[in-house]
Image (cartoon, rainbow, N blue to C red; front, side, top):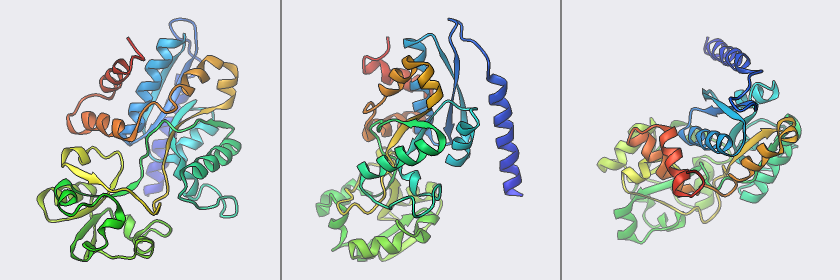
Length: 303
């Protein structure tokens, strides 16, 4: 039943995208389609791409948000219903390709090179270099605990972990390559408890003192809201999820000015900057368009 519902939703999105095709912008250019998953960082990047494209070219961009997951994004790109999207290098390890095609690695450069090669060839897309931020697993503790024990890296937790309670989303406990079992083997320690729970409860737990550590994503705005400290993954355990803009090759070949705009997103937004932008949207309840515009103006990239 769940698959049927997802299929119906996706079919409606495809029909909506198809209905948007073959239009012309006010200045006589094309109207391109950008697809975003449910995560806020992808939606903010969609607004950034839209504003830069419309400021620097005669083209316009329409956004389709809340796509269920990367397979739906890739399928829409493959069917030429989407032109651009934001995707993450670590997706290359999530069963998109056969095991013999992919070499699992936690090296950031190697991972993005594999994503560029494999996704690029399979879907005939250009996978641009990293925007500059990562949205991947990490471990966070309170700033008070970090200062008290002088903890900066995940290795620094070793003397204290046996007395600490970890909160995590339910999937991390069971994950294979980058789950809790592998984490214990890599870092050589275990937490006194590792409890799977809803993400919102996880952050409420560390804010109330019921939890001592959580598995955060590196751009989570709750890190700022609850004054948490992200710990450096000094043994490179977690696979990197560097964010990049992707675009269909036939589009950027036909419109080189479009590729110039997309290429200018490389290195534009750091992990800390994206966390702050997401804090404005998710915590302060501001719109993605307003926040993205303010960011571009502060960078001097938009009047």
